Length: 184
Image (cartoon, rainbow, N blue to C red; front, side, top):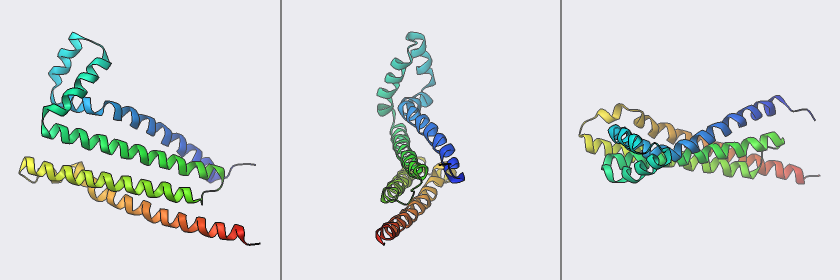
């Protein structure tokens, strides 16, 4: 059976989602140490001259990021939580695209996947809000209000609401499809 245009597009989108998911996991792996190297670039140079093994350098940075400063720790936790949540969102998108490729997108498991994506969006939004409040408290001026972090709060809140509405629509469509399948 020949694939529809929607299924062809879903296949392309699935490839992009998987590539982004893998890149997200790789970035998540190196995030904490990169936060530390941002704060202490000379330490990285000294470590590279001492031992040019990237894994050793990464482990040293990972062990130091949590001890450096409160801001660095909050930034690392924020980025790791956002990375985990975006990885979950990408995985849920992959699962939903798999059902589109099967030709049966109106399933209860798609509703569950969209609900999990909504929860992850709300976690990113809440984490961004906590980081913004912490940053305002540290800086004691309104400068942090004009950063990308401020856009995360309403952006991911709205994305979570959109995912939740789509979840409810998919749940209702799955119930209607099930009722229709049971009707003779």
